[in-house]
Length: 353
Image (tube, rainbow, N blue to C red):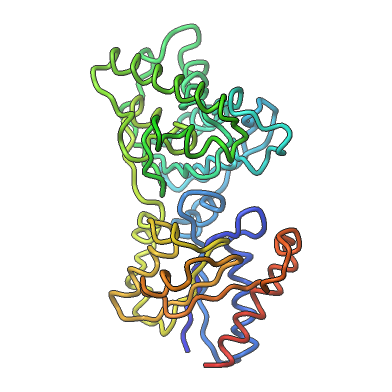
């Protein structure tokens, strides 16, 4: 059997590469002659940098920047030729901020502007930005301020000439900037926002969008993805002319994934939690759609599974939950436990084939 293993990170637990290594170990235990290819993948969130560098080549650079709470931190980004690959979660990631410290009213995207400035100074003219996993809800104002501070201190954003640069947003979120489906309402609670905070954040976003539209004569606040990363998507679109691409579709295009599938008998994909939302443009369903065109069976593995029948109807041949029903979340989130359970689940599945 020729297996292709393309599994998203189990957020807060294992990277894509770590999940895939455990899966490979389980398959190998069941079939010593199996040919296994592992491709690190990401839809734009955590692990995006490694996934894109694996696909494109290039090198990592480390930069000293501010995190979302304006604390000094080291962040990495990638350069391939004149293309910079920036994973927002590396700079202002939610997972780096403990729950008791999270405050979306003060969290800032300033560090993203710093890392952009560094890449521009290095001669980059194309930027692939992974927007998942941010701790911010500042509509990208922090990022814009950092760009001004670097390129035109004491002046305004109009004094910076960056429109000749190309910005591509890798993102699986299609929410607008504000409103019932906007950044604050949908993503604010996971970033620590109370109901009162959500109302204030949404009002801030509306005000910022109104003022920006009056100044530039157009309004990108309603575009799909404007609400990504707490409105950072909006700032990229409105102020930098960014285009949005579905994160997994963009990566699969770069990988020439359809060609890779030509010699594959079975695809193993997955994510930390699989449910009906998986079918709404997330990584596993992007993998599924490509595999279906070549009639290749796809196995979905996950740490938590809901809506199994719906997932099977969508086309997944098998849906596997790696954790027993009586497992606690705390235990399941331990990296070594997760690796062991992923390996065992694939061993048992492949042994039964």
